[in-house]
Image (cartoon, rainbow, N blue to C red; front, side, top):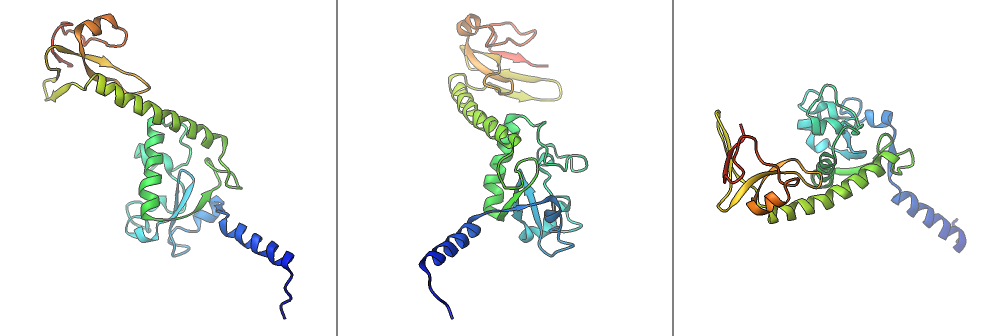
Length: 224
């Protein structure tokens, strides 16, 4: 016989709702059990997010190309491509751009293709599923990288990319007259070839580096 007590019912309902919302946090040993061998399900983690990749068993099952990701977090190797030594969640060696690309991959590919199951206790999250100091640092770096990317995109509008042609004997870069090619690196980006007006390049020489053995006024330079 069920005796209704409004206070008890409210508490029970609230508790059920809370536990239903709460994400599961996997210990490393728990995740390791979902390797497709010990259990039929295959789970893997990337940046501390656990996904059920059973539907991708042709990639992650034992003996398949990416079986080494099953039951673990190998975030670093997603970027380095070193599947022997970099199956680890420690991504402290990655650049902000690499972290941004990795996080974009997680939020795009994995959330769209696979079922999200929870978080992994480790480098990115603690046992309660809260971001670790490392993860908070990553979030700040990625946020800054996102802003820097916008600035770099604007910079490419102001100073367009050079045309380029590479062969075994040369790597030539050039700009349409009257612009000249210059080496430019801003907002944490890699060095690129930018087309700029000669007078502006001369006035801001520190921002526009000339190519060696190329006359400053040339619209074409050989980088080799």
